[in-house]
Length: 485
RNA sequence: GUCCCGUUCGUCUAGAGGUUAGGACACUGGCCUUUCACGCCGGUAACAGGGGUUCAAUUCCCCUACGGGACGCCA
Image (cartoon, rainbow, N blue to C red; front, side, top):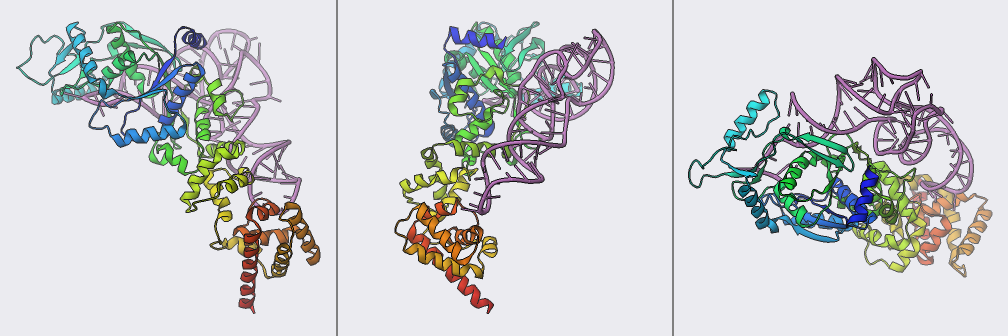
């Protein structure tokens, strides 16, 4: 059934879908996933994405939040085709429509006070009913007094039910009598979300609404409104929510942080997108998707209905894959970002680019990569990793290290082959195995016990720095020797 | 409380009325090896429970439990 509907959408009209965040905070992982699904589905079917900022609640809406959302979307590569549009720019139209409904007797003025409503709901709750407006102002003929504050409520249809074929959830039906008369215009004269959404979706020609499951309960109300206005009802796809590691709601501890903090953790946007698309959607046994593959294969109709829990380890694994699969130049921007954060600036980009391949399969995050390449770009090491020094920098290594330095100094050509020959001759001379030579060298050059292959490490570092660091290593060992004697 | 939705390894998922219930992350045994990784081979681990329907159900239906969402002059 879903397949058929997608076909229908593709054949008969340009798909137009929107991402509609409310500007009350940054773009978090759940919002990013919604934006991603909108984007992917639109690309798959040649549609357009529209960004609309839902700022009808002026008090809560903040410009910084809009900026943060835009920045997050941009980093994720999810810039919209149209927008951003602001719901608040269309207030006049919203109020026009409310007026129209009033005239058509599909809406009415309600003079109930907050206290009155609270009391009503409390009573309903006590009786085990769903708290909802009982429609007591429906038949009021005149205002209690001139200029009495009031809201405008929608007069919901009586009897019958609202049914829609949700592209993710399947058929959902709700009896009209379960719903109450929702407020369209507040007592301060401003339109509410449900009114604004319907008017804007209609005006913008939105024909597919992709949003979180938390909006399911709004959908029948919105459909009622579309029908009251004799407007075509869009299609809906309600995505299951993302849960935190504890299985509950997303919290600050569990992923509800800005997507940009994932950047700071060293994740690639392509990897984050890849991870998010696999939450609720799959394509056979494939785990790693390029952006192009996602845009080609993703269909919101194939999304599952159950909520997923965010898993940092798997994200990390996927990130490692994307780092490995990337062209080195594609990693440059993020690598520089993290190097700067480590205080390493003005790095020779050509050099950096040439060195990246050695670190791709060794790095699961860009933070890791930046940390690992840093030894190449500092003048002198700030010190040795204590554990590595203790394990590998032993007095017995002093002479081989010194001898290696001497031989390297006179090496005619700084090539892998030449370096290897020198290593072999030193090993022969002292009758030691590779590990006994390579590890002390590695610690001397990088400050740590891990790095790319030792010959590659020397080649990348260059003769000058290699020699000075080997000499520093020898000096360190001499000092250690004296301390012991 | 009321309404809506969900439930396959710890996690993300595949799956079909009859399968040794598949893959991936994580964990773990081994191989490779100059370190760290990568890679390769292997292992542990799941159909929430109870009733039906059926020759046969984890798969279809019902109930229960558990989880989530909604119930605002928020979006």
